[in-house]
Image (tube, rainbow, N blue to C red; front, side, top):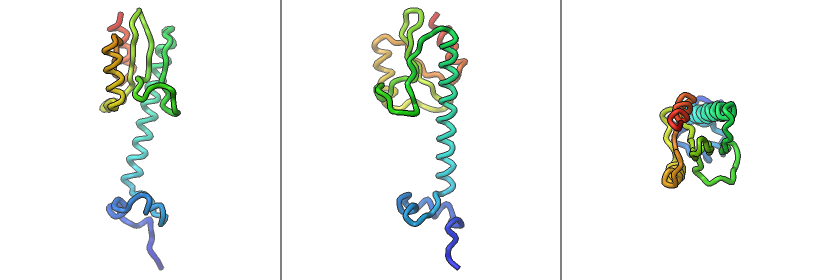
Length: 137
């Protein structure tokens, strides 16, 4: 007969180190799968927000430098998602989903840019992006 590995409770699977689970071919706990799925969905939603903002800027003739999320970049760690200049003002925008906070590296870089005279903002939606441009006029 034998043990049905898929019937092990989540509470037990969580207590087994991921490397040990892999060695004996145990599945990850359901809670881990759910959190991984949620994290992937958040990355996708943030990228969609960035695409909306990039298109918004492009349609208005604003040339923006966009940091890539999907691959290594030569930008410094923590560089905001968008860097551009408008009406004589240097702007740095970091896109975050509602409720998310910038990393320590992002906070450090944004503080340095602000100290050097950049207009630095965290935006959570396209409407907030529109408000940023309106505030700069």
